[in-house]
Amino acid sequence: MWCGVITLFGQMFHAIKDHGITGRAIKNGLLTLETWDPRDYTTDKYATVDDRPYGGGPGMVMLAQPLREALAQAKFASPGLARVVYVTPGGERFDHAKARKLAQSAQPLIFVAGRYEGIDYRVIEQDIDEQLSIGDYVLSGGELAVMVMIDAITRWIPGALGHELSAVNDTFSEEMAGLLDCPHYTRPACIGTQKVPEVLLTGDHQAIARWRKKQSLGQTWLHRSDILEKLTLDETSQALLAEFQLEYEKN
Ligand code: 9D3
Image (cartoon, rainbow, N blue to C red; front, side, top):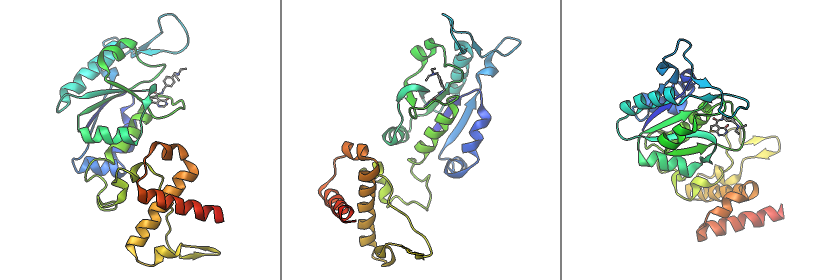
């Protein structure tokens, strides 16, 4: 997966270049991450990247010319025709389905991270393929949103999760992917009155997988009924959820 980022703050991307699953994906050649700074493509003495908005009002707007030059360089470095994504609070919501789609298409991606009030609309009109947001809250710029997206996309690259999460894991099944996680436990088996559920100590892998799926469905029902409404559960899942709900009513 090839990702280019147009940003005034390239150093911020060390956060994902130098750490964790994204850092390892880069080391292993599964992910390429390069940044381009619009400031490097300015021609004036002060390296100006923004200006006051036409029509007046507060804040500044990023200039089209340095953005377009940076974008041209990123496109030139891209291994193929890139998809250009502008991250903006007004974009479509980035979710797990979008992360998976972008990873699976394997098309090179160029993210444009804005600062100030945003970028000159003519860049959006002419140079942007898709606008994405990570949620309804206001960030100070697009960089953190781009890093969130690259992290989520990387998790869908085959091989990027290494051995700790194998492809056998049902996290990758179409149905489980949108559900909340099941509860996790580690040693000791007993903390005061709090006991680890019996089934997890049995070594019965089939029973454990069944318990986990039931808990995932149950947690999603309890805390994110909106997710459950959008899914179509197969008969096994419907039965597992009904079991969870029955036990929940009893307790
Ligand atoms: C007063 C109008 N503001 C829009 C809600 C202006 C504005 C605020 C913050 C313009 C840009 C930004 C910076 N945010 C992003 O670039 C951004 C973002 C976000 O703030 N929330 C969720 N997703 C994203 S993706 C990019």
